[in-house]
Length: 367
Image (cartoon, rainbow, N blue to C red):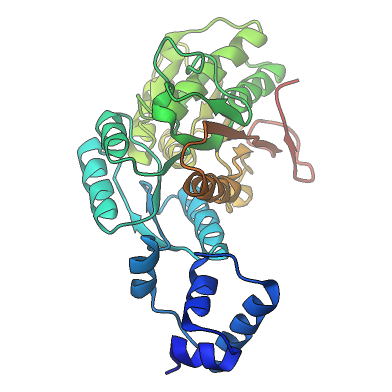
């Protein structure tokens, strides 16, 4: 097996120069760098990662803590994170916090003990202990998918969501970088689309209370009703807790109302499955008996009958941007934190009651 000394002899440089090329610890002339890289390739040299970490105090690893990795949405986020990490020479250590604050803190502590260079975390509905731990230990961290809300006296709140790449001052949300999809306007678009088809009683199966995505999609639901001139009726909102079984029960509750909804918006893909089960149990058809639109597109959404009208999140891009933000943070630890929102796409199919048409998607806000 080739050693660093072998690489140095082949390239005609010192072992220290080879180390600087491998670890980026000192500028090296382009010609010298190329000679070292060519020698590495020719000899098949594999750097000793452990030795490198002792020199640089970096492990070239990222901790990723996201719940429900089996969910296709988070699977695609994982693909985006992995691709971005590998592109920059980082490995991943992955943990599932199970959306439980106590378990979340435990897995983040374990990742920290593994000396990851930084973390990417989809926080739970009660992330206070997580945020306190990460802040206390100055762990470079990006919050992904679900944002940690700023204090109530800050300008960034759930009622006034960030809609672009925005700089956040050190007093806001612990100055952690955050990346997620737009939630308010895309949800409002589903509601106004259903209202435009003549529906006046539009229900929402919302996610787990406390998650920022839940609050923002409820806000979008209410904005959509207001834009369509429809009153908000709290009886038409039921929580499916972001999972299938609870969504099935929530949908059953809505269907049992004296005046049930004629259209339904489901706030994530697993809750869509639960809602469809509840409808099937009652022998109801979509869109004949009830129109359906969902937040979250997934690969088999167009294989359902009818094909599902949905909001598609840029999941892989969210993962890739999280890596970019984390690497920027590692390179400049003192820079202001940023909240990055990515646009979603409206994918128009037939579960809303519209005629079948070639599938197309549109991005942007409600017109």
